[in-house]
Image 1 (tube, rainbow, N blue to C red):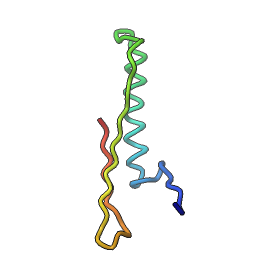
Image 2: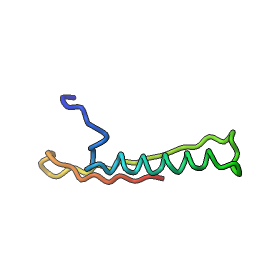
Image 3: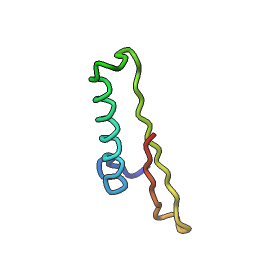
Image 4: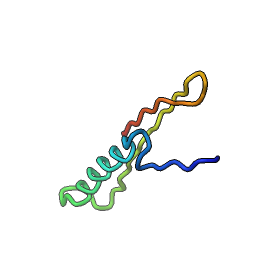
Length: 65
């Protein structure tokens, strides 16, 4: 692998933006006294990359669950 990917700028920043949004939701949930403090929280981000025929570009879809 020749090149390192910067996750802050990957997919024009969409990845970092979605992760930050979901982490904020988790932190708000953890700080809520009405939720179980023992319960583990999870953030799942799916990146779907579809290459073009020349394999030099890929469309990227970032989705969080």
